[in-house]
Image (cartoon, helix red, strand yellow):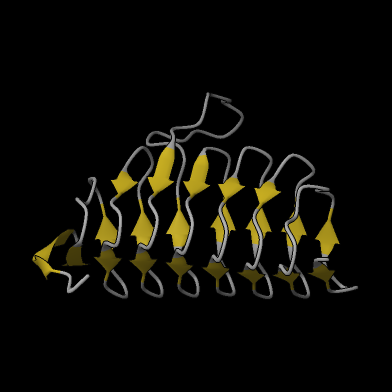
Length: 153
């Protein structure tokens, strides 16, 4: 059974076994969250978001419509995802799709632009601004994020 803190606002019934959703989270009704996840305090998850199994989402993260997180992903505190490359107030468009593949890690305070894929087992250094897709098993850092090295995995 999932644990949902009494101060969280979780409207979704699609929350997996052994998942923890902590205080001040807002989970929209159509969001899907897998098993054995840790959704830390102050996280927002919109409707068209899919989170796999064994995922950690640290505090201060917003997962907007169009974001998909595969299994075994780590998302550090205050990572910012976008879903519109040309946002305008009161102009509603279909959100861009962003995919974080299994085993990837995204460091604290990184910004992930809409419409990219972060490859399997890739790592994004803290504070990076990711403007293009990152291949499998690579480490990227900086603003804009650039290739640093291959991962050990």
